[in-house]
Every structure is written in C-alpha cells, then in structure tokens.
Image (cartoon, rainbow, N blue to C red):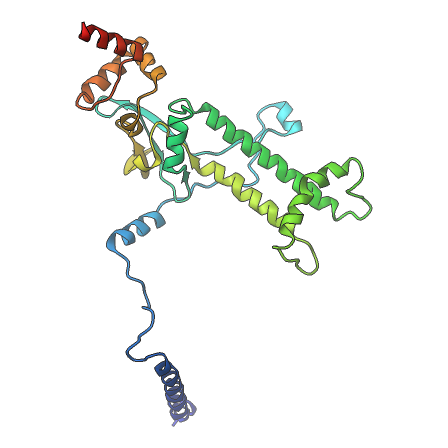
Length: 301
C-alpha cells in the first residue's frame, strides 16, 4: 500500500465532516427545500445569439494620446493639431433604396446618440443632412480635452519640483485650472504610499472621454435604432456592417425640412420624383410649402 492510499480514509473523513457541517448550517435556511439561487441564470436564445454576435465583432482601435503625423514643416517643428480617428460613413445611392443611404462598419465599441436626443437635434435644431456643425463641435471638444490633459500633466510635473512654487506667477494659472479637480476627487481617490494620485486618475478619465469621441457615430437623417445589421464584401473581405437606408423614420413622423424640399424641387427633381413615386401611399409632403399652398388654393377654386 502506497503512502497516498493510507491518506484516503483521512481525506474521505474530512470531506464527510465538512459536508455534514455545511448541511447543518444550510438547514437553518430551509435546505433542502430552499435550494438557493440558481447556479446559471436562464438566458433566452435571442439574448444568447445577440451576446455571441457582439463578442465576435471587431474593435475600432484608436490610440491615446492621438498619434501625431506631421504633414508640413510647420507641423514638424510645432506639432500638428490632434485629429479624431472616427468611424467612416460610406454614402451610396440606388434606385431601390433611394438617395440618402449609408453604411458603417460594425464594431464592438462604437457609440450612438440616444434616439430621443438624435430626434431633438434633427427636429428642433434642424441637424438633418448637414452635420458639419456637429462634427466641428466634436473635433473642437476633442482638441480642448487634449490640451487640458496636457495642462494636467504639466501640473503633475510641477508638483515633483520642490524648488518651484506653483502658486506664483506664471504657474498660478496652471494651478488654478487644475487644482479644483483635486479638491473634488481628494475625498474619493485615496493616496498610494503617501502619494496623491488624483491628478493621474483625472487624467485617465479625460483620456476615456476624449477617446470615446472617436467611436461616436452620427446617424442623421436616421435614428440610431434604424440601423440594420448586415454583411458586405469590402476590399475582398466579408465584414459586419450597419446599413441605414430607405425613408428615414423622422421624415414620416415629422415634416421634411422645407429647405430640403426646396432643394429637391429646384436642383434635384430626380430625388423629388423618386420620393413621390416610391412613397405616394404615405401622407408625406414632398413639395415646398409655397407650392403646396398654391396647389390647395387652386383646388379650392
């Protein structure tokens, strides 16, 4: 008999003792009638399929701080301005789907505006097709976060030089711009080995917010929920995409912007003809307001 075989009775006795002990404790809580929480929560087939689909999607990879690629001699010596690395929108036209279709590559880490906020921007603020103002605001906000993160890094560096008083001119402006974050976070973020790391934590938060702007996708004139999952052959590779096509839902719920209808009537009659023929069964006004009013007056006569 080997040494391991001699310890088998001791092992079994130990296991039986623990089992009896835990069963005694469990009976206080209603065991065996009360079996406790299930080991694995029940997941429907749809949820499981959606989870598997999202796990297989690629990641939109970006870098923080943003990669600098100087293109001129001025940028070589004075550094280029930070640039976003956004998800590209590919616009296309077809006789079946219309003139305002586009698709994007589907990634695991892309973000969209909530439907209610996207509807507010399009209906109340008239961000329908021309989203240059939104793109400009996002880029300026991104640059502001990058510049402010550099200021935070400079403030952290100043704290390591004991011969520099950060509360004297000109360093006091940097301290005033950053130290308020320390007052807010100092009661939340603990020190590590006596070193205050609130600036480092805040710098990480700035990086997450700035990098998330790279993954934000504007879907005007569609709502984000109108995207349809599909697959397309791009550069010889089958990729997952989100397609936004046909008539935008907001153009059915709300009047189409009159400026757009005037553009169709004056410069793109082919679009106007397509809309009138394809969606003639829907109660949608495709003509400009002035022509619509004249038509109603003539019908009354």
